[in-house]
Length: 418
Image 1 (spheres, one colour):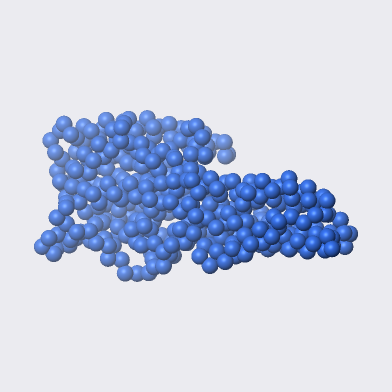
Image 2 (cartoon, one colour; image 1 turned 180 degrees about the vertical axis):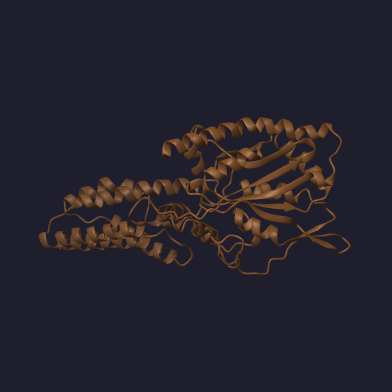
């Protein structure tokens, strides 16, 4: 069944890419015709329900452009990408992923989300005919080969912020756009109950990964303390449901003071699906780290009673922490804005790899090593850093395990010297 599902989605995507060229030709035909009447064009923001794949946890945004006079009904999508491109995962980690704007027939767009069991909420916008024509021209310009590819940024420049910016930028400059939301929670989608005030990027990401503990762990491992800063309303709009809610309560205010709602009409064009998702792996990250902690206590107890050095366990811990630290160090060079300062590198430190040979050699010979003292200092700094950064689940348990090994190695080798 899974193989059939991926085969079907592949066909849909192939049709979609074919549809992009179709959409390009059909949307551009309006330029050579008589300008359509206001009533024949509809412009809508489409908000797609979150899915079960990692890349779909947060939902999706697109634009629907419908021109009945010229037989056009397309979805403008800024979220086109391909896993088959060289070094996709590596480029994504470093924030060097290029996404592409696509234009596909709306019925194909709708069928793909229907098959994936993800609802679509449509908000028709209250734009003038002139603004709709400007939007059409902007989309055509955006879709030129030299413009359609852009450098994707998960928070600041993604498929949702692109849709928002091109829609709002077409509203006449003599008008003011004001969001009048007063409630403290979202109402349109049941999944979203976060408060609008005093929430961080991490809070929002956590909300969408509540049923995916390992995805949440991976996010928290890579995000630094900048992800814990409080966000404003515009910054929160990198998530589709947040933008949808803000559009619903936004007013367009003219110079004379008259105002109209930005959203003319809204409805579910594809009903919301009620699905439950569970993590495929039976254990949570914290449970795995508790296992490591129990093993650490057991190894330390064995060494205490037998007076033998099970140096292989420390070598293993240093190797795992050092290798993980290489990933965190790489994220310091990433263009993602919230990964540049990550205090978890204090215990997942790549420098541990440089000390493995010397420390292991001294352990075999029952000699003290300064690495353990330096590690205690790093662990203390890590614990203090918890005051300003939220760490990945289980990291405090790992820090405690490492602290026990450091203190034990200092005490026993100092005692052995005496």
